Image (cartoon, rainbow, N blue to C red; front, top):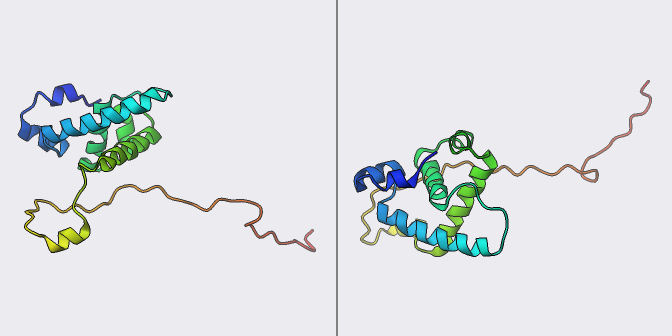
Length: 147
């Protein structure tokens, strides 16, 4: 399992190579997620097996390396659904804060004095919505003269 305590001892260049973000950005993410976690914790519920810093590392590793959720679940010793839920939750907390958003598509086309280092293409795993099976939607034909 990855550990933030080990990573924060590294030089900033190596930290960024491993996580994809600078240490200061990670600390800002950690503050946002901890405040959200405290609000959520006050409402009750089952405690999360992973610490907040580990959840952020999990999300960053998923986007940085694009490993399958099954492999990450094995490494972090949680279920695949927990990995998926954690990624979605941390991502939504960071986006709702407004501090961690990427420029819009229109802004990328206009490029008003922005020096872009990278352009990202989202090719992440997406949940598949299959139609629900029920009796009304299924066409049942009569079978006559079958013996």
